[in-house]
Image 1: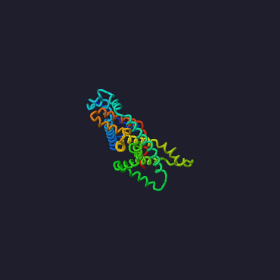
Image 2: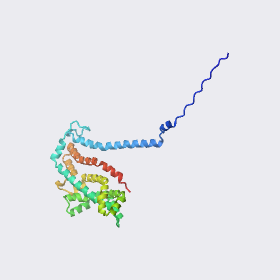
Image 3: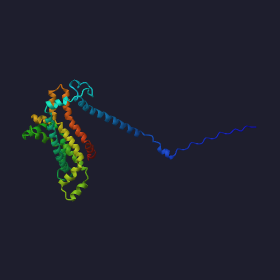
Image 4: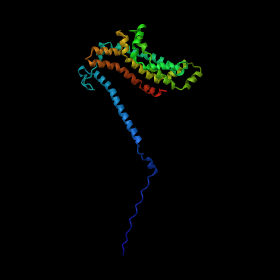
Length: 303
């Protein structure tokens, strides 16, 4: 009897993947996506390196200001012995409070007056129509190409003729004008919608009322950023106060630190304590207005 052999059962074909599974499967990253990711990672690493390089000197200055004299140059970021005697010495042996007050008063007055005058000039150059407007703006803008040492001697001669040497006026008035502030505010005003101003004019508002009640409140972000820039520039002013003043009662913080360094050239703990005192107000001002600075960068594009 012939034996019957059963044929092997045929294997079933694999099921085709469903449309839902195909939709969930991640698409392979193309070369463009990989390039974008690598570029973003490279920018992140660069930003971290730049941030560390910027913050490290400030941390080293603060750390050294808290060290005794014999540990300032030990190379350690975290001090072994923390002392506040360096700050006490700076405030007791030197009229540092007077230096701080002079710098604060001069910087604050320049900032407030400059923002008011610059915003009015920028509004006129952006919105008002008068003959020679563009020529006047180009003349103001061209002053950005002139460096400070070029006008230093003529400015000193003018200040001397006007009797402004060794006065607060000599420290304040020449520093008020800044073409950069007028330029930046004009570009910001050009981006404001005209409909708001036209509606106010229809309601009977003049140019001054439109500027004061509508344009100025809308300018808070850019004005806050410029306030930080102006205050910082005048807080760190050194050359012009050195030339225009000889009165010790008018000494600003930067001249005070320079004289302090000449007197205590080997005592770096005192010098760095004085530098820390001068830097802390600016750091606090920046952190207080950093949101406004970022907002002004976003909303004041050049047109």
